[in-house]
Length: 489
Image 1 (cartoon, rainbow, N blue to C red):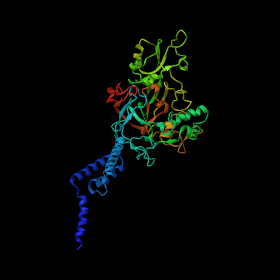
Image 2: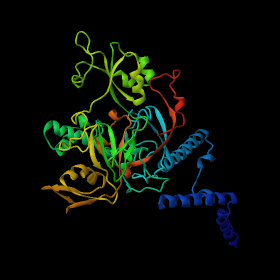
Image 3: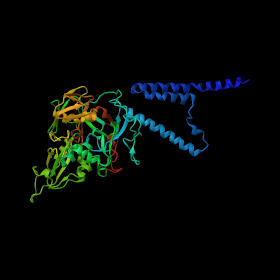
């Protein structure tokens, strides 16, 4: 009789579920964690992991770790490394999206609050992590894979903006990491200035529309490179200080910032450009170092007598009618006081405001002549708030409505048409923020490219975990030990 054979098969099926209790415990624990994580992120996709856990710990239907039975030691060693790398990349992917990531300060726009060479621990939990727009991507690469020079993500699928609940919300003077708003359209060979500023400059210089200038850029890839579009989460990461919050009115008068008509005090690390004239001699590298002015800032700081900017300023001249040495330096109030106390210094004055031809300001329109040091007043859009669509409002908020809110906006005969329908008012879908660098005269910030939408917010820097001074050698103070674990504020 063949009955014993049938019993054996049934026994084999039962034995698959007769896993040790420790494996059942692991399966249950990881399943609970997955369910909680899925509820927190509001995404059912994570539940796909539960059947995989069931197979991994209980039934072992899939050949997990098949290479471990191989007699080929080389193959086994390679697969062990592959397994470890895949696990590490998966862990980094989840951690970077939902919990934290590292960020290096590449430019001086936040000096002296954050320095070039600071490595930041950026919390995604502070404002709530975003569900990625492009979920299929290579970890640790923002938009391009190095060496291969190809996209680090797949265009499809693309998910709409959604933010998971975090610990708090953005407050004034928070230092914030965000995706560069004007980085949606990028000529890959010519990323600075941004595409929209480039179109504006070309249109002004050649007397053509910005649309014609944009077409010119696209038709000349040999100069500008291919023009690519980047989803929100794949745009460059920027870090600035939040100055203006949703629904507030911002104005800058002679470098002083007013919010809703009230003066806002500068943070201690804020600095401006100053003209510094000596009584005759040149300033040494050692003196710059004592003042705390970086090599990058002082190497190009000596101003030529031919500089048009200084001709109208009251600088001292020698017997031959030439100016004593003049420097243009970024400095905090504390550094300025130290400079003034130096015996060889004659004149210290803040750099006068520059024209809109030199410092391009948002909105990119010649009818609104705001400057770097005198800007606004400007209302910052707030979710649910409405504005009347006037000719002036359209100049200021046209880019927001089209590019950030995704509306089809047409302007015909002075009237606005949204999605083909004439509109007198517009209600904003998102909150917006105003970001500025602490290095006020040397920062490409919201004064140049406008508002930062809420869906561009990445996270909040918590502390500096490493700081490297590029001006010094490894045995000459390369590592700034005093900045280790320094709070980022």
